[in-house]
Image (cartoon, rainbow, N blue to C red; front, side, top):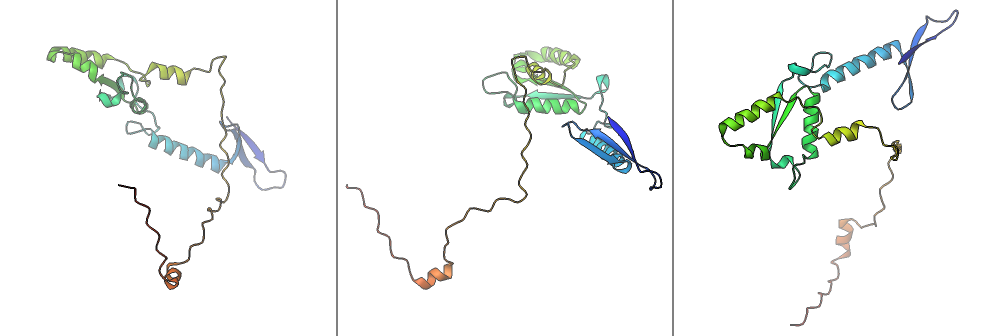
Length: 199
């Protein structure tokens, strides 16, 4: 939360308001009124641009019954080899589309192949359209990303190392005379041919 700070004193310029805010990484940020307003405008624009084509001007995406339906037909490339486990790519795609406001339904190829005739397929799709999927395609992922670590597990975080201001110098290469120097020196002595193996 931002806390306003006042500056100035008797006989000084008009009082300027500063806002102090604790950031997620624990650092503190102090902004003027203008800087705070500029930051809010930038965040608003980023939210609008990153929310996807379904978002309104505030970055809100449709929820509940208002969501458009996306049907993902999952062929063998959506699963790891010889399994019915979705690939990380497919799970990420599902999660991104869900966050953009779509109701994403999946039709795995192995389920579709079991269906016989148009009537079974129609019933299958009617039931599929009634599903209310979450953003998690795999329940294990939801548990992994949502739950705090167990008592016997340790949660660690790493701070990125600062990059040096100037890059290190390139490694030294042995000096090679320019081509015109080699031409003046004359032809190189012929190298002996490697010995031939006996027949």
